[in-house]
Length: 215
Image (cartoon, rainbow, N blue to C red; front, side, top):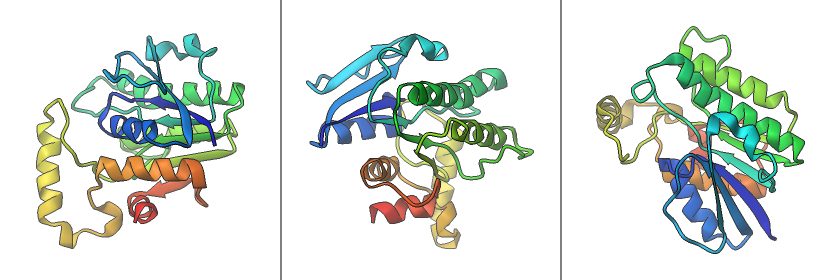
């Protein structure tokens, strides 16, 4: 098996872990990353493409492979401007799905969010829901949305609100239903790796199901 993987968001927390996993996975012979910044990694299987992610059409000739892992995402704290937020969390995945469809890629895996709903009254859940809806319209055969609850882990930038939420989730974990428990980025990355090879019987995969795939 010599698959070519495409990763969007390889410099992020989950995307970076996934990149390391795929570089060490013999089933993948080439890993293409697309982003505005280099990963800082050197590997014979790694092919990096740098550019403006808001102009992904510029990547159309290189955007070829077997599976797309879309790990792009931001937060309200990091991107308070709603228009910019939507360009990232909606625009990039949807444009990537269009490119994948045009180039005959039949597996498209995206990190979304628990509560994603295009009819939500909450802006951020609505954006994720609209993204899911419009990615599905591309009709890519194996499309899956990973819907984690709060994602744990240490990030380069300090997000005070997320840190406090992580402490609260850990402290009161015994009271929280499994679907809403904090989930580690390594677990999400591993589940994406597994689903890319073995598939899954649901389009939307919530936190508890993500953990079950890995365990």
